[in-house]
Amino acid sequence: MSVQDILDAESELTHLLGAQQAVVLSTRIRLARNLDGMPFPGWAKVPQRKEISERCVDALTELPKFRRSHVLRMTELQDRERAVLVERHLVSKELASGKTGAAVISRDQTVSVMINEEDHLRIQVVKAGWHLRGTWHIAEQLDDDLGARLKLAFSERLGYLTACPTNVGTGLRASAMVHLPGLCLAGHMDKVSRALNQDGLAVRGWLGEGTEAAGNIFQISNQQTLGLSEDAILKHLGGWIKNVVEQEWNARRKLAKDEGERFSDRLARSYGILRHARLLTSAESMNMLSHLRLACDMGCLPEGHRHIVDRLMIEGQPAHVQARAGEELDSDGRDRRRAAVVREALRDFPEVTAPTA
Amino acid sequence: MSQPLKCSLCEEAATVHLSQVVHGKVTKVHLCEACAQKGGATDPAVFQLADALTSSVMAAPAITCPKCGFTDIDFRKRGRLGCPSCWEVFGEVLGGLLTKVQHEPEHVGRAPAGILPAGQLRRRLEAARREMERAVTSEDFEVAARLRDEISTLEQQLTPS
Image (cartoon, rainbow over all chains, first blue to last red; front, top):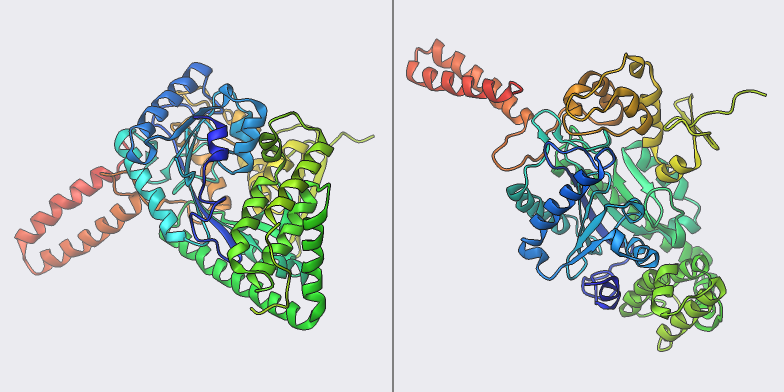
């Protein structure tokens, strides 16, 4: 199994395998778990990390969920292959840059378990669209299966023990990737971010911690992991996401109404650039694709075309463009190649019309 | 020239300076490039964690984990623990920190199969004690004896081994 197989496969997020939705791009659950009696990866010596890695890989590959899965050891991959995995959110930057990290990734790419990241095990489940309970149940089942095979570090008082105090307890980080062009265009995003922060939720950019919110895409997740049950954490996040989605729709409708023709003009201009540009930077394409996604949500373009936009957002990232090219590209070469990929994908798109939503 | 500021998390030279105003109270955090990248400037946890790490609680004398050799100084530098046993060893230091970065200091969520989390055990224990009192008052000794056994089992489960 290789990174090329991952690129070539039809996955949850890149091909309409899950139902793509307006506003919420994907739902993600992460559980941090550690083996009892073993030092955490950041403190463990290399032979210990190797032992941890082998024990975890063995336990995971025994599970039916991971039959025919990808087992990827970071040292065995090239830089650009690791970059593809990071861009797909299958592994974190930290795991990709470490020496003894590994990842076990399910065939459909909905489940990836990072080994020897900050914790011994980071179980991640992702679903396209907003499916908090469904995503949680997959993670819960996997946690039970792993718990039956590995003795996990757990304290009755503190719950699942993790390397960092911000993850102890449930070890649960639940998040939604949301597309908020309405709130951004209306200038309300700072206010929304602050409200979320004050109620214990973190707002981050497209690639997680410390990244820019390219393409008006934000990741909203819980902060606290201790003293709240998993159910309470999910309910709290769920309530806020519902609220944010509502506010986003209000902002979009108000914009469409206030701006009239200028609203569809703005989206049509982005469409024009994407259709005809010969050189497209990653940032420009993300921002233009954000307008295109908005056009699909608002009925300015057929809703059935939205998954193509979502796929371009993922495949327009630098390492993806590079990997698809099959030859070493410089920055201009990548921009040229990206523009060609986008032009090709949008060839059969109809014209942008006035909003109907 | 004054001394260059050090990163609140790792002691590298700080190049990113953040100020947060909550209810008129200004909190400042200085971060090096790497920690700022990692933390994200809009992430409130950066403030909470940096605050907790640099507070006086951490000025306690060095403690070493007998299991993995990790010390409180290591914790101060890294903000991460060495091994699961560190959670017991650094209990007091972490207790103060947990009340700052977490909702409550005790777990109430899931547990591996066969283990009931402490919160649930304690609630059951309290309920059993109340039931036993009632059973004794009403001279229902058979029920009281059963509850006494359950209480002693629960007490054993709640005592850290």
